[in-house]
Image (cartoon, rainbow, N blue to C red):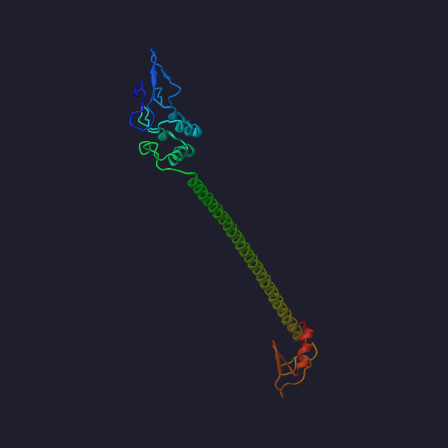
Length: 251
């Protein structure tokens, strides 16, 4: 059985070792230990298919070094690289291609490009640099967000302080207006009382000078010969009489 019968690779010219297998009478496939490209199972998978599907990168490398054909196709027409589920496993194929660029038709193996240790180190360095940049970017964004939050809090506190000051000013204004209103009421009441007292004095004909027409309301001096001082409805001969009369009236 050295011409590929039962090998399931779907591509007999992959460039690797010929596959060897034997057919048991009961229909089961047995593997010659020396043949790493033996295909078995319902999908006719080789050991390299299984290793790639399971993500066993180390086993993939070992099989490739032992002559496993990366161009073999399973029953669904897939090569082992197509089944690689993670980057480490895919890189195992690419590392092998970088080390042995002429071993296989790698286009048929669907391996996109070679990878060397230097290239891997360069990629890792770039990845670390990118991660560091992302870290610094997030750090700056976090710092900027914290600064914006701090400034917003300060603005809100300032605005609240200004609102509080406005409320205080309004309260002071209201209190001042109330005080002025109370004072005005008191002044008006004093005027009313003073007028009432004046009328009583005039009615009684007393009050220190009689307050007759044409005479000082305080001392009674004749005002026909001078220009009188006036306050409310009264006339006086002097400022002293004005003050004394105001004092007598309580205003």
